[in-house]
Image (cartoon, rainbow, N blue to C red):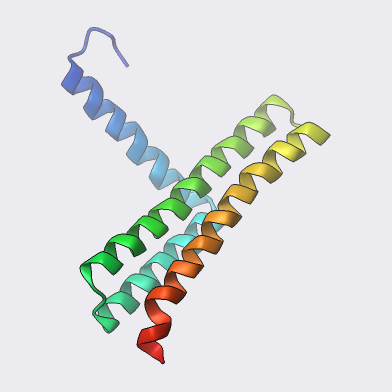
Amino acid sequence: MNKKDSFLVNRIKSVGYAFRGAVFLLKTEPSIKVQFLIGIIVTITGLYFKISTTEWLIQFLAIGLVVSIEGVNTAIEELANFIHPEHHKKIGIIKDIAAGAVFLASIFAIAVGFIIYLPKIF
């Protein structure tokens, strides 16, 4: 980014970089692809069951949280691999912690799905 550009121009450039990163994740990361597909499936399910506005908000927050944390996890893994390409115990712990954050977000997102959809199914 050029410091001489206006605030607005710099923000537009930042959004472009962020969009490029999101597209890169969707194109290259299998776990993001799976989570994005699950997000589409539960969105279609929400349309089918005509979930409430509050349920939509909570569902989208859960989807966004899981996909976003997966993106952060991927960035941490890439950085760790760049810094220390060969296996290292501490790098492994760092990667496990980042993956654990995705796991926890996923578990809570599944719980949200159960809370929203189980009463509608049964």
